[in-house]
Image (cartoon, rainbow, N blue to C red; front, side):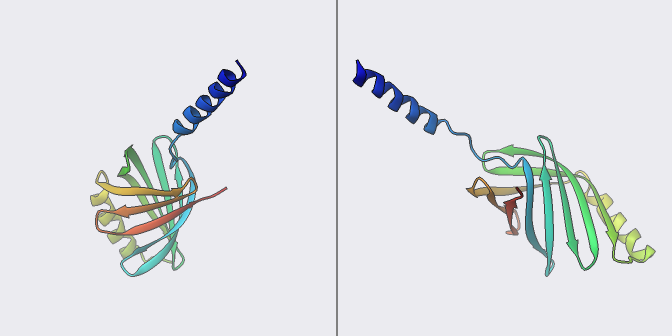
Length: 137
């Protein structure tokens, strides 16, 4: 009887290990991204249905809001809004940025997500752009 009782605990333990949840992107993250030769610090907050990204470089802040869908190791995000602030941007440059962003709204991008562990995720975009996210605790 003792052996059967002990064996049931071993089986239950193995079942629990086999059913452990996959890591989730939901939470707050930090990272860096390289775009057009610029390296930008990033803070990302992922909720159940939105992703808010804040990038900073050269005294400017770019804040983007996207909806997203996670399927397997792919995340597809769809741009909802992007704002550029700071950096003493001349009105003409701000107008050009706003016009370019207006064209991006509604566009989707898919990246592959590889979890290195529960607190580290590497995202690779369609054009090979890589970004490593580290969970903020």
